[in-house]
Image (spheres, rainbow, N blue to C red):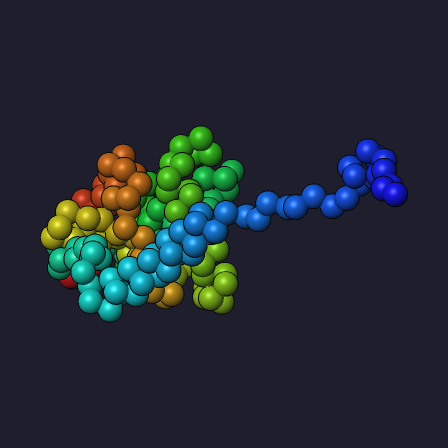
Length: 163
């Protein structure tokens, strides 16, 4: 005697599940391992690394950047106190942004915000803005020629620091 199995019971039996394809999984692991090995090799040997040397300082000036009445940003020569530029609220966006970024770094380092900053022109043509107290340096060329010009104009003043 044979017992007939109802069709619905056959459907209820567990179906064989497909497993995740192993080739893509192993390929992803291999790619991650290759990336790690490449980075370690590059850092250990210097091959494949891009190191830029700005050269020697050609010109530099120490500046104080402060906020005056009416949200005016005032840039002064640090040694003489001579005002080099004043920017109204709608002007000097990059100078204002740089001031905020460096002031934030000084607050976290617990350094006086009124200490001077240093603008340096290098033999490579690069221009940098350095914090004389925290040692932070921003190479302005990464932000474009207009932003470089905003700080490079301050180098034309008389109160230069000897490189």
